[in-house]
Image (cartoon, rainbow, N blue to C red; front, side):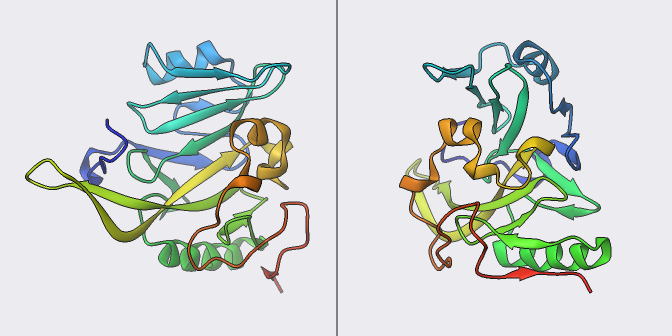
Length: 207
């Protein structure tokens, strides 16, 4: 898929998130060759970060990026909004939806589970108990004339992580090496959050 293609709903793989364990065919702790075998994509785009054992692999056919820790173990999976699989958490669709709708569903599910919802660097929901940090991406589409067209719609993406990164995924060494959000602009309209380790501006606490 090209970066601007939005994969139709009926063409997306359906993955289930098992909090802090894995999603779809992937399990946290897998080796890179195991991830590649599970996804069946022979030539991912791999980046090795000098001086560390940290690396990342982009699987364009799947719309996901795998992030590996210093021991070459899978620690995080970024699911793209436009081309990634649909990820379900207890019946909630997390990907390619209006961020406000996903936030509402996450808050409802958190109340049921007694989980805390906090705000991540971009102003989107983060739930450590599930290893989920939500994001949003601008949707693009291709017009009949084959021009790439930027829409005015933001759609949801997600970073799913294992237990070691759950408290502050975007402050962890592997994720910072892959995507240093300190140099990124937050999503339009998001509240600024200084760092993953800081106390967020708001959080939902179960009664």
